[in-house]
Image (cartoon, rainbow, N blue to C red):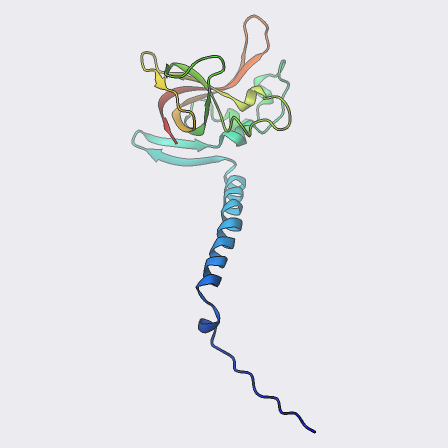
Length: 183
C-alpha cells in the first residue's frame, strides 16, 4: 500500500501575516526598542545633549546621570566631582526633574531643589547631596510650584558649597533659574 502525499500549498507571505501579527510586532518593538534607545542614547551622549532654543545654545543635561558618582558627603572637595560635570560650570543648561521644597509650601517660590525623581531617587540609601540641584529664581521673579515633572533652564554652577556653621557639603549643583515650566 502506498500513500500519496499531497503537495502542501504555500501561501504568499502577504497572506500569512495579518493585522494581529503587525500589532504584536509593533508592541514588542516599542516595548524593547524604546528603553534600549533611551539607554543607548544616554550611554553615547553621557547624559549631555547640545541643543538650542529662542535664547541660543543650551545643553540638555540628564539629572540622573550627573548624580551617579560617589563622594564623601561631609568632606568632599570640588576635585571629587567628575570632570565632565565640573566642565558644565557656568554653562546654560536645561534640566528635567521634580521640584522638592523640603519644609516650604507651594505657590510663588524663589528657592527649591530639583531632583530627577522624588520617588525613584534613592533606593540605595539616603539621598546624597549630588542628587539635588539647588535652584534660585531671578530676583523679583518668583516661580510657581509644580507637583510633577518640570523643565528648568538657566546657568548651572558646579562645585562644592559648604554650610558655614557645620562645614559640611551643602550643595554640588546650583542653578540660576531663567525659566521654569511643567514638563
